[in-house]
View 1 (cartoon, rainbow, N blue to C red):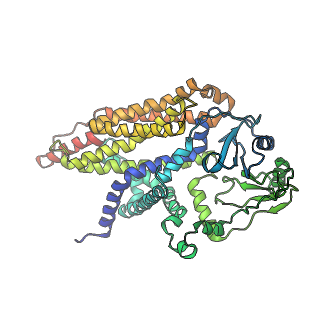
View 2 (view 1 turned 90 degrees about the vertical axis):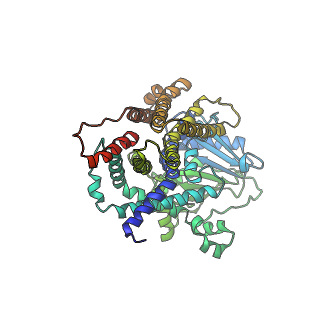
View 3 (view 1 turned 120 degrees about the horizontal axis):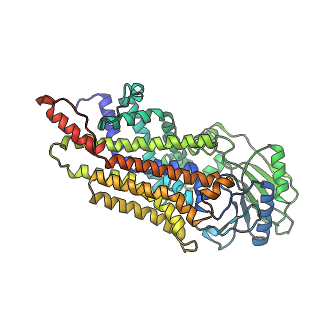
Length: 530
C-alpha cells in the first residue's frame, strides 16, 4: 500500500487519539486541577481557618504539642502553614500507629490546639488519580506514562500533518458544524503547543526509571532505593544514643536558616531522635523557591547544641535537568498569576483532546447521515465521548458535594467521597447509553451546571467559610474555589443550551442536483456535532 508520510502520520494521529483520548481527557483534567491541589485541600477542610502567617510562633507551638503528645517518637515532622494551605501539620512515627506507623495531626497555627478536621483526600485524590488512576502500583503509573507517550506522539504528528498550522491558528469559522470543531481544535492546539509538549515530555522524564529500568537493574538489581539514594542523596538516619538531652527550641534553628538564606521558605522540618543526645533537625527546601525540584538537601543541625552539620550541596547536571523537568511539570514555583496560566493551558489541553474525539465521531457520522442510523461502533464511541467528558465533570462535582454532605464523623469518609466520584461517573455512562446523543449531552451538562454552580451555596449553608465570610477575611484560597466553581457552572450551562438548541441553518439557494446529497449530509451532521 503506497501512501505518503503525512498520510501515515494522519492515520497515527487519528487512531491513537481515539483509542487513548478518553483516558487522556481524564488525566489532563485531573492534572489541571492538581495545580490548585493545596487550595482544594483547604476547601475540603473548612474546619482549618486561615490565619496570619507567623512561622516562628507556629513552629514553637508545634514543638510544644509534639513534646507533650509524642515525646518518645523516633521522628517528628512539621509543615508550617502558608497562604495556600493554612493548617499547621505535625506528624510522628510510632510503632503500631496508623498506616505505616505514622500519626498525622492538624493544629491551629495561632493557638496550637488540635483541629478536628473532617477526613478527606481533597486535592490529593485528583493529584494521585492523575498519574495512578486509582490502580495498584505500578500498573496505574505504567498506563498513565504510556498515555503521556501517546499524547506526545499525537502532538508531533499533529504538527506534521498541518502544513499551514500557524495560518490555521488565525482561522475560525463559527456555525459551520464539523469545520468549526476542526478550527477550534487547531487554534487551541497551536496556542498552547509549547506547554503541551513540555508537559508530555516531562512526564516521561519523571517516570524514566519506571519505563526504562534496564540500566538501573543492571547496576543495582532489585535495590532501586539504592539508586535513588546515590542519585539524590539520602539523609543520614542516626540511631538514638539512649541518653536523654533537651532539644533546642526549633525557632532558634529556624532563625539560623533565615540568617544563611534570608527570606527562604522551608518545606518540612524533620526531627530525628527528639529528646536524645543524638537528636538531628533537618530543614528541607520549599518546592516553590525555584524551578528545579530538589530532592533531599536542606540544612541539618545538631538538635542539642545547634551546630550546623550539613548544608546545601552542588547538584550534578543530570540531577538538575531531571529536577528542572519535574519542577516545570508540577509548577510548584509558579506564583498565582503563573499558576492560573498553567491552569488555563491545562484546560486548553483537555479541550484539544475533547474536540479531537468529537471530530472523529462527527466525520464518520457524516457518512451515515443519509440512512439516519449509525453503526454500533459509532454509537459506542458516542456513548464513551459523553461519559468520559460530561460524565467526568459530574463525577468531580459529586466528590465535592459528598465532601460537604457526608457526616463529618462517618467512618471511612474519605473513601465514600471517592465512591461518590465513581458512582456518578458510572451513572453518567448508563445515562449516555439510554438517551440519544445530543439530548444526553444537554442533560448531563445541565446537571453539571447545577452541581458546580451550587457549590458556593452549599459551602455557605454547611460551613462558616462561605463567600460571605471568606472574602472579608481575605481567605482567597477558599473564596477562589467557590468563584471558580460558579464560573464553571455558568460555562456548562452555556454548553447545555448550545446542545439543547436546534441547529440554525442559514437560507441558501437551491443546490444543484450534483450537490444536493452533500448538502443534506452536511445539514444532518451539523445537527449532531455543532
